[in-house]
Image (cartoon, rainbow, N blue to C red; front, side, top):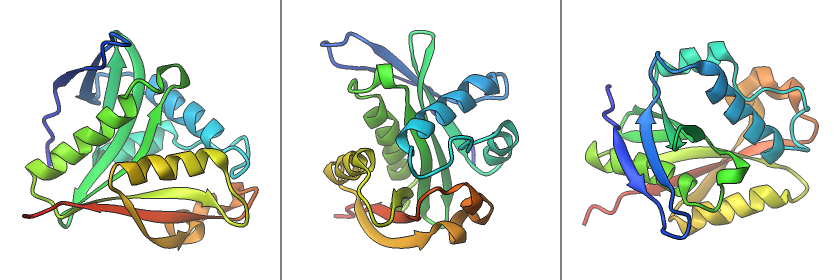
Length: 190
């Protein structure tokens, strides 16, 4: 399903940034997108995965574009963030929300998630879902912050799934027991 995502958003005056959200195209270089995702997740999931675990490879990224769409966030000419989404069976699913550290606290992650929410409303889908990897048996402070951030946006955890069930080939990269928390936000139909 083609997604028309050419939108420009202005962030708070405090930062004075103009953020362009647009869909990834085959004319865009792959390396900066994969590097952004891998660098953000290597820090965000430190202590869960082995340090040599890549969150996405070039081939995986290309394959994913056949099933869904990656939205890129640019501040000026610099790639600042990304999110990947798919639409299937009245559900929008997203993953790989990543914002470079020096662009955090500027609302870029919120803009990317808001764009996914806007698309879901425009397509009249029932809900938005995603999985959040968390350790089992200990608290990861970064993951706790992320869980609270999603709660503040109206998302609710509704279940758990094993890493083996969602990405069996990656289990060998775990350095600590982990599972995926399943999250959802449904649209108010009133």
